[in-house]
Image 1 (cartoon, one colour):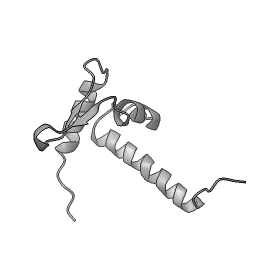
Image 2 (cartoon, helix red, strand yellow; image 1 turned 90 degrees about the horizontal axis):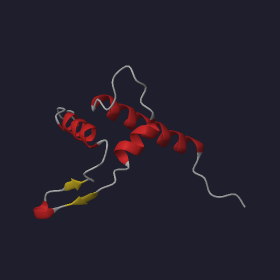
Image 3 (tube, helix red, strand yellow; image 1 turned 120 degrees about the vertical axis):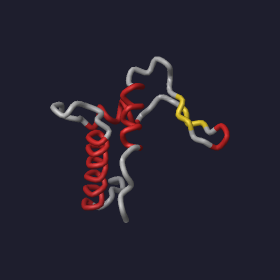
Image 4 (cartoon, helix red, strand yellow; image 1 turned 30 degrees about the vertical axis):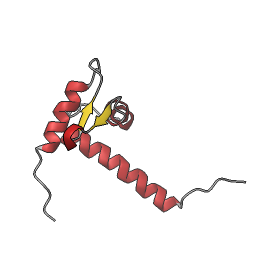
Length: 90
């Protein structure tokens, strides 16, 4: 018996949305230089799948990543750039 699969249009929409979110985050956060192609797998393995813990001492969330994590500075820089963006008017 075939497994249940979502309709083609829903799956296509979700894939396009995930792709666009990765591309915009990489561009606005300046994860890679402009002349390099951003590959979604690279962004996922370096910045989305973070080997850390989210803790909240005193109610403020803090991400604790390993000290030897090779992309820590790039992640911190991208996070600061994304947080500095003005809010989108609704």
